[in-house]
Image (cartoon, rainbow, N blue to C red; front, top):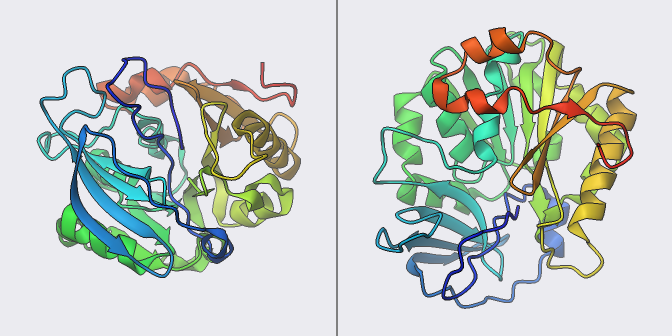
Length: 309
């Protein structure tokens, strides 16, 4: 998804859009490749039945650039960013984007298992596996070529080898993900939802029935955390205003999970939502987090259906 960049650059940075993982969304895509900004060096350019996949590096000498030294996974014709990694910072998997909020999720969950709907190159999974040695991750991604690129250029193969007992990748439609993937059954402790199509939150996520199905993947006491976009999202399709789509997505979540059972927070101009009430024991949650993630504990607020004020 997109978020603003405060520092002016010679050319605008590409908007940050996260992964599309449903067959219907892939069928709607009409690629119109655009040239990369000057700050990006192309590493790989691959076409699959679902995507135009590009891997690009941002120069570490790009002074003031928020992604200086990063490697980016670009999908779709306009080259939306779907994953971020910093090869020169192997000691930290954090990205300084809303993805880091997902890494604060596991201490709230009743079971040490997490589904990631919208895997991309694995940015969220990498952080979760890094910080929580007891948590297992199942990721869903539609395009097998995206997973292949992630293994070749984003260290996913090494991540799978290192965490062979905790990381499982499913190539297929994320909205057909099944809680039976959890060994022993009973559902996942939590589900992360990061599904975009053509630069906009997936249409199916504006339907309460979709959220009920996703909620059915979660064990009793578990939660769902989702990237709902926002006004900073620039959709490729006319009429898909980012703020309106965010509001429709939140309304669908509230309809599915019930009044008072959706909380939200802002990360830059992005909106992250989580099911369940506001966490009462914020101090206990914070104590179970590494210091660099504790900032994501105390800014949640109830979504009330009126602009989440």
